[in-house]
View 1 (cartoon, rainbow, N blue to C red):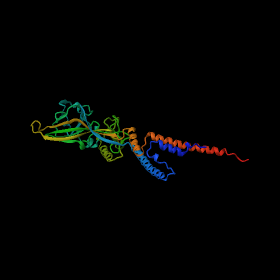
View 2: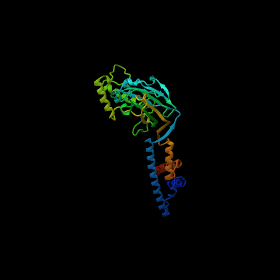
View 3: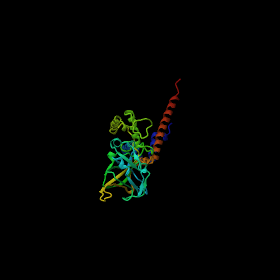
View 4: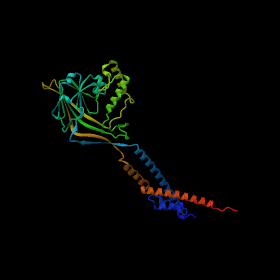
Length: 383
């Protein structure tokens, strides 16, 4: 005979009286008292609604968690020393570049620190082919650091050139001098105050810059990726190269009219295409805010000179950083635990109780079926 304590009703009564779930102890469904049946039905409906909403929230939270959401935070960082930006200077007259005099933090900078750039050092077609510029680049390797700020510090340039194009950028960036360069003319003294900005994004599986995956690798360069892809297409489509270190007898595109024309058309196709030479961005991008002002040189000695002062506004950096919305699994569990407690008074222990109850119900059902089967098999046959 089946024990009373093993029945489904007794298991349910024991579970509702001992569990930490809210409201279950109200669901007695005692048919002897019709009012209790109505009360139990109302509580059952409320409990099921809460359970349904909770399941929806849990599924939504899990889907959100595995979509790797992120937040953006901006803060100021103050340093004792900052790397000075790269300064690229170009002029139409190659001889004007040789007249450049540079001082960094009041110290003289020799021409060995401002190497001449070849057109192959540029990725952008406009700079390499259309500018027709002679260029030098200060701090190309990003080795110059400064602990000073203000107008009397930084980089001071002076030349007799009639006009200069100047771009201030990070070592990993290749400026388009026709688009990004600032034009400074003879007879003026120009002041460029700069402020450093850092944009830090999270690598895969997080989405950066709207809909892209960034590369968090110090050896990776977005510009080099673009340049390598462009050179491969140049060799394939135009039979020429822009590679600054050719491995064979390649023809430089600028040395051949047809190749030059082909390169210009190819670069235009790449520039306006979202599928050709697609390179992922870097996770760390550094930019410089620039405030430019100029005054005329009234001194007779300086009247025919061009002077530029580039200096840091201060030693702070504005950092815009992408951070995970969830601080690991513990943050997700804390959020889910709060929702479970709000709707059902549930916790890990009450979930364990529920699992145990289900196991008991299944085990009891299997055990009862097995006993019935044995009872049928043991019925004596009539002789």
